[in-house]
Amino acid sequence: MKLLVCGGAGFIGSNFVRQRVVDHGDAVTVLDKLTYAGREENLADLRDREGFAFVRAGIEDADAVAQAIDGVDAVVNFAAETHVDRSIAEPDAFVRTHAVGTWVLLEAARAAGVRYLQVSTDEVYGSIEEGSFSESSPLAPSSPYSATKAGADLLVSSYFHTYGLQTVICRGSNNYGPYQYPEKLIPLMILNALHGDRLPVYGDGMQVRNWLYVEDFGRAIGHVLEHGAPGEVYNVGGPDECPNIEVVKRIIELTGADEGQLEYVTDRPGHDRRYSLGSEKIRALGWEPQVDFSQGLEQTVSWYRDNPAWWEPIRSGDYREYYERQYGSKIKD
Ligand code: NAD
Ligand code: DAU
Image (tube, rainbow, N blue to C red; front, top):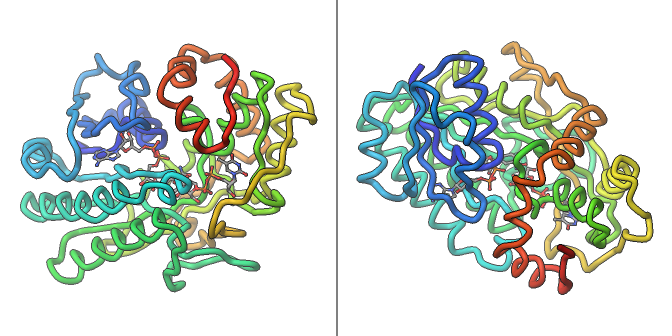
């Protein structure tokens, strides 16, 4: 297959591109704006592979998209602003990328007559105290991040209904694994634990997330691309759920950090309490997760421990300013 992967230099996108190029022999063009979260280093091992190409551009750039889409079989769109805390502080880019960017990509896919897969999130359903969301649950997003992602999903569905564009949507639960930017809970806590920095837990730490190893999400997206039915939505939930405080305590154990580093801090405004996805539909299609949370977390801690060359430049750059604004304290070198 020949794929255009937008946002392929980010965390999940780069893991997906690696699977498609290495395991499936696909030709892949990555189109990525390289925001703070996108890094060419995430794709360094693929640079010289036959069929791999990289274009630096935003998905809202219609000319660049029209050039990059030429000759591909399908578009997979990961490109997004993805951090909920940043969407609360500065929602502008979320609206631009998710609304305008998705529209530009859909128009290009329609003009080229190619399939389109939108990568979405469990957050579009909002929070659920008990039970799990199915694909037909109503959308009830609560942050600027999830509201703009929900808007993008609706736009994608409208292109199926109105123009007959062959679309599919994959809604994943919380991903973790190698190459995740250390603003997200798990890599932030691992690096802070390893450096003796404080471990800032929001509110009472009893919010629950449904953890999905990044390679399992990549395999699910590939599976839906090959076997999904046009116009459908597929939930992709991880095998285990866990309250945040338990996640942080497991990281303390795995890194040998001190429990005294743990600190309860002011809660995130509008913080969703629990996410949970029912994944029967994609399981019936033949996918299931292969990595449970305890195994995946161990692998992830080892990857960060073994790859300081990947995270050192982040911790010494603009990230420090973000960190100080967000947490009101400095990180150690
Ligand atoms: P990420 O922040 O690591 O990467 C996002 C990538 O998109 C970066 O490479 C960035 O440079 C690029 N990008 C941002 N704006 C762009 C634009 N306008 N044009 C082109 N490229 C742009 O994010 P991630 O965690 O890998 O998430 C990827 C996708 O998966 C997102 O759509 C997200 O909503 C979805 N998702 C994430 C999770 C999760 O737990 N991380 C779970 C479910 C779904
Ligand atoms: O559910 C899928 C979503 O998961 C994706 O769509 C988003 O792109 C992704 O960022 C993620 O959103 P969350 O808000 O769930 O992830 P985050 O890693 O920011 O936070 C996970 C939980 O940990 C959440 O309850 C907030 C809490 N938290 C987070 C940080 C960064 C803390 O307690 N302390 C922290 O410092």
